[in-house]
Every structure is written in C-alpha cells, then in structure tokens.
Length: 271
Image (cartoon, rainbow, N blue to C red):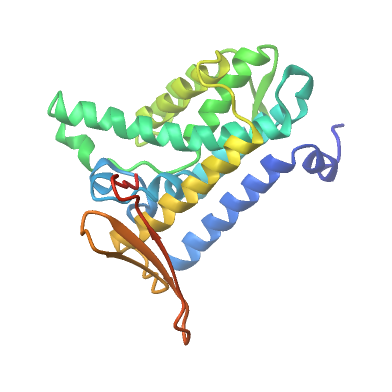
C-alpha cells in the first residue's frame, strides 16, 4: 500500500496548492456559468491587450474531464518537489512553474502570430487555449531529462515511462481529444526542454518574486486597460506630456493620491 494521502500532500505542498487553486477556479466557473471565451487565451484577445488571459487561461478548466486529466498528471509530476538532491525541490518547482506559465503562453501567441502573418492561416486568430496543460507538459519534459527512470501515473492506474511521456501524451491527447491544443502542449514541451537543458536558468527566490511582481502588475493594468474588470480605485491618466503615463491610486473619502510618473526622457511600456 502507498502512503496515506495526508502524508503525500505534505510531501507535495506546492503541487497540492496548485491543484486546490485549479479545482476552486473550476467550481467558480461552473457556478457562474463562465465560458472558455471569457478566460481563455487567443491571438485576437492578446492583440486587444488582454494580457491577463495568459494567467487566467492557465488555471482555468471548463470540463471536469479536462481538470481531472491535468490534475492527475500534475499530482504524479509533483515528485519534482521531492528531488532536492538532484537540484530540484519545492523552490525550483515554484520558480520554474512561474516561468512555464508565462513563457508557454507567450510562445503559443508567437506561434499563432507566425501562422497568421506568415502563412495567412486566419483560423488561428480566434483559436482559444485554456487549461494547465502547457505547464503539465513542461514538467513532464523537465522530469524526463532530469529523472528519466520516473513513471507518469494517470488516473491512478495508467503508468507511462516519463522519458517518452511528453510526446506520447501529445499524440494521445491529439487523437482522443481533437479539440486539444496541440500548439499549447508543444509550447510546454519546448519551454520544458529549454529549462531542462539549462538554456533558461539562474532563477532564484529574488528573481521569482520579481517575476511574480511584474506578472501582478501587468495582470492588473491589462485588466484595467481592456475594460474586462471595473477597477474604480485605479486610474491611468496623462500628465504634462500625454506620451508619459501617470498612475494614481485613489482612496475613497480622502484627498490623498499616490502618483507614479515616467522619467523625463524615457517612455514607459506595460507589456
């Protein structure tokens, strides 16, 4: 018999938290009857400035089967948290999960851009990606390089050799679930290999927190700019030079404001 679930949760704290977050988001989506078009990532919405969708698309699932498949695979991949002796561990897992979420989303958009602008495939302009699969495929790939003897367990009874799991799963999901995002899964694999081979490296707690801060900043400002959420406490307005933005945080019933303005000789872009 395996270990009690409680002990496994303690051994995989980050994985357990992510599974809990994705599950709660799925429950909220079902309760509010939210469609994938409201939270998913597409080229069209990205061009309109909905950068926040890179985050919401990763943690949102529409169908319960989609959620169970991704979370089952993620639970198995949580073994990364226990491999501190290989230079992995909990901190590594959290740091590079952030990298996978952001870069896989950006890579998907870059692929869409190439297909639309270079090959004139307008179909990909409105293709909407949703789900944690990019990150799951990324961790499959990293583990296949770092610990090729591991197994990937799905649904508690299906076991795959981790060394072939990324491409086996890529083909399997494309056949069984035709609407699965092939490019989304492929982007996770590409970023996963870049991390595993050291092409993307040097993440530390400092850089992870800095990245998290930028993610939060872009998330909030893109929500405001796109009009997807009414953030009355946050205003973006011009000051002396219309090309230089100023940010004000307004508190109700008080005359105090906090302003952030650009340097006199520079431009500020929020991307």
